[in-house]
Length: 262
Length: 259
Ligand SMILES: Nc1ncnc2c1ncn2[C@@H]1O[C@H](COP(=O)(O)OP(=O)(O)OP(=O)(O)O)[C@@H](O)[C@H]1O
Ligand SMILES: [Mg+2]
Image (cartoon, rainbow over all chains, first blue to last red; front, side):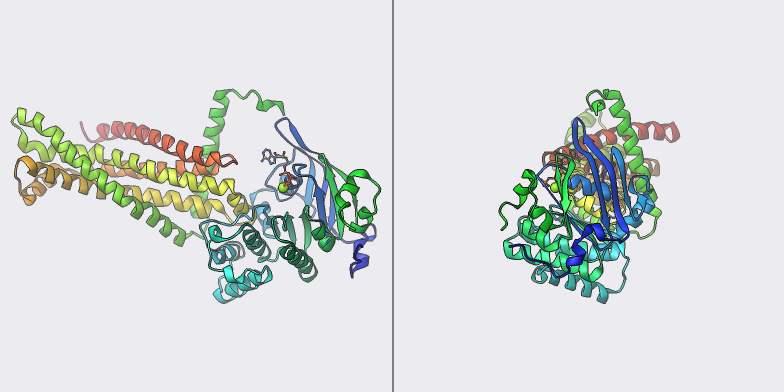
């Protein structure tokens, strides 16, 4: 029984007239002989949450790494705010990255720093905030929102996998980026925490008007957080639409993602 | 892409040289771009300097003792036992101290920097820092290279002193010489042309240790085994650099001072 979301007109991608924030055209990427991305096309509009589904190893992480300029495409273009990422110089890339958040699949916490210092790092090093009171306030707020306030002075090595992931998420959202790329935000979390994280992603979108791409295998997360879902298969896009549209799809591969959902 | 199959070794070698030059330029630019990471620099000086002190001290002490015990029979044959302090101090301060201490530091410091940064690379921490718009070169590389560049010379000086003290104790096993006499003899036999070139040399040793450690860590592959590879090749490469720098330094100092 697919639950209908409160904001149903936002769930119609075809009628959206919002500015295109991320535009990917004909993206290709290979590693050696392995052609991971063959032809990816995707437009993400301002304020939209796009969920990417796809089997492990189809190149979902590679796609978002191309968006943030960690990897250079072999062909095609990736434009963010209208500018080609591959053609940016160091300074332009840095400015772009300040506006973007990236949640790593592994959390990627800095091992040598406590959770607090991890969260302070982007505030002091990137946003160059000097006011310690403001820093403390934002760190506590961010940890509160992922339910990790108790762990504020712990070292990453003392956290469980799920806690690291949540701390990584807190570090990503603390700078309030305009675009957030989430790489499997709920993988490895229990169902209750997963749901909280999915709700959090949705509330960040609403509150801060964030544009997001969310990679996930968690259909519950896709249902809660997505305005639009795209399914990737074998380096290409297979299908796209709202969660409910895809849910009703007759396509065999698309259907296989939704088979466990009533 | 098929070019991955057949990159000749010499081409790879040149590519690596190019990478290292690029890494050096990045390091150098980031020293001056403002926002120097003082607290991290101090922390690294502590980690690198203080934590290596014990090892350097023990090694230097033993070297001092051993050198005296080895030199003594030869000098006694020539009736030159009184030359022992001078022989020890000149050889220790000019050559043995700096090189042994630098090699010890390469083993301890270059490997730990290589392993630390290598594991940050593997666990995507370097990527995370880069992608957040922060500057990993400034935070991680500049601080570590400068810390080794400062601390290795300091460790060398301390090691020299401990080594010479070890020599004094060893000398008193067979002969007896008061500390003040030993000290006077050493001060009299050491010239600034013994000390200064050796000191300058250790600055370069320190730089090489930090640079190689950081480079190997940053350029390690993704995969847990590459952490070990990064640490290992950091030690090997840094040791090699130390000998090459030493060879060059000897040429320069003998041209300038020892006519
Ligand atoms: N830096 C890299 N060098 C070489 N190969 C890579 C690199 N990054 C990714 N790959 C390869 O690209 C393919 C796609 O990887 P990617 O991480 O994008 O998968 P994914 O869709 O995110 O899978 P998962 O759901 O398991 O995270 C994999 O086969 C992987 O081996
Ligand atoms: Mg992935």
